[in-house]
Length: 165
Image (cartoon, rainbow, N blue to C red; front, side):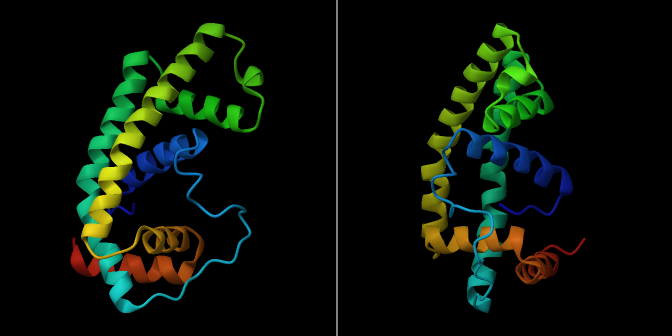
């Protein structure tokens, strides 16, 4: 989701990465970083995308708070969890830590985070479709936002129009 505040974007980026690392969203995204990105969307699609993102922000903030709460409950900071997640993704978690307790905590937190994300995913998807956009189209625009300067500029401009500060 795209947020108007940088701090929320940063937290979401970290947590989105967590979800990808544990496989929940990664299965839905196209494989391969070098794939050609669709950057041709109608004005109506852009407007729906921005409107949906703005209504998803409070829902996603609640999910993010739960995820961060899980890490806090486990006594693990987000940056450390992220470092372990990156090491795991690269197949060398033992290079990041040789502490079996920390690995266990990381795995427990990851499983709980994945459960929270899975529970919220259906609700978020329903919200997207209830607001007139197919999940695949929403994902296409989301991916394009992160990979296409043209799409990012268009979405950011619409967000600025709707949320002048």
